[in-house]
Image 1: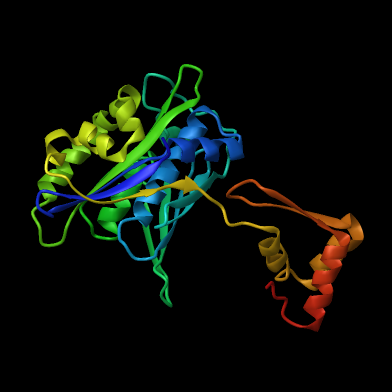
Image 2 (image 1 turned 45 degrees about the vertical axis):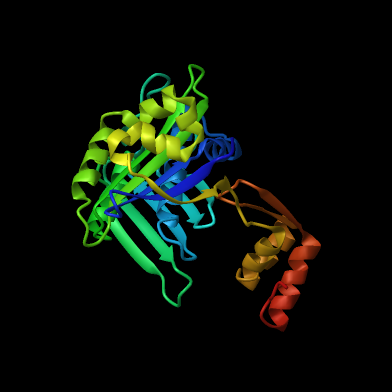
Length: 305
């Protein structure tokens, strides 16, 4: 079953609930970046958190989420939109992260406990919304939850988990975001959800219940129990790993390079190779293509139709 995200209200509208399954998303991100074991878990949790942030509302929105820490992973960057498309990368994918099958991988020592969470929200308006908070634990979901409370002033509980097999391959991945609605009485629900996330309910549901790992509504019920009893499902949408990079975009980006740098590429290397950070796709440009960019640059602004 493909990955999906469900948006719901519970307790007569006092609480907003988003639940998502991201197993295919996580596996594709790990495959593209050659991430294994705990590094794959970090990619999975980051992508899950980014999707949940980007799909909080119905409006067209794109979210860039970045967690930068002082640990060997360096950081994770995620780009997601409300259409359910997400891409993500780690600064250092080869880091060995402790933890594995039959237990939750701890990321604190790999990501670090000192650093920042940066969030950029693009609502399709003239200006972007930018927010920041300090890293709290280095566990990604706990840090993004802290960001929502401290920077966006939203009472939130966020859980993002990924399960590894005995051979340290990704078995399942998913997450839940529970938020108190303005003017409601949802705070007790949010705190109970937070307790369940921190005591392993989400991890256990993904690891032990195949239905929960494949269906976001089932995942919410398995984790939250009575909290999700009066679930009012608003919509379900598919989610997937997607990167809009292309050779045309690469050509356009190289048009911003200085003439001296372009000349150096042409004279010394006679070609250029550009790798997309998000999807690891490589684009090769010939000397003739670089020369064409240089000529266009000298004539005026380079544009790609």
